[in-house]
Amino acid sequence: MDKLKTVEKLEGIQNIESIMAALKVKKNTALNIISILRKGGYIKTKQTSKKKRIYYISKLNKIGGKSYFEIINEISPVKVSESEIYKIYGRVPSLEETFIYAIKTKNLRVILAALSLFKHINNWTLLYELGKKNQVERKIGALYDLSKLFMRVRRMKLKFRKNSLPKKTESYIYIIDDFQSKDFKEIEHTWKVYLPFNKADLEDYKK
Image (tube, rainbow, N blue to C red; front, side, top):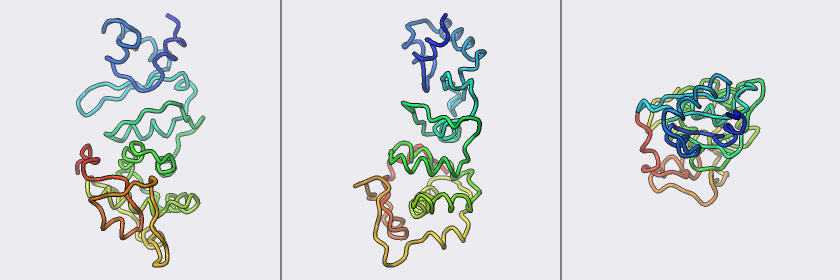
């Protein structure tokens, strides 16, 4: 078996069924291939809440470091798939940096999945600095208040909230252009930020 060619064919997020389909092999053969690629350092495995294994397959797994999407997928019940590998070589990006990245993608599913990061983010000073630098601190605040409705999250520092809330003269802004919520008008009003989600979009999250 040519490991690199197999890895290239399977690059991304897979489960046993998708590997079987991609390689046109039976389950036992697929499990043997997974074992070989894991020993070669090409596979990272995670078990979902339903005890189903998800495989993150990439030749870059051997290099070290992590991509933003890997970090999100390790935490979030909402999984995201990346067409390209944005690996941060030689280091693991912080959760705060990862959340900023998610907002900047302007991708509905990526931002939805990244909401889980609020369960673990605790460096509010860093998050504010990065948010301010990228002009997304109000978006962070609105998404945080949204997350609180559906899951247990770390408490936002009062200083972050005070410094990030909009001034009376500031206009409404979009997280994703032309998307706004029908269900979370109060949060939108507080932050002057249009949220791209409705209640139905957050069904995968539970407190």
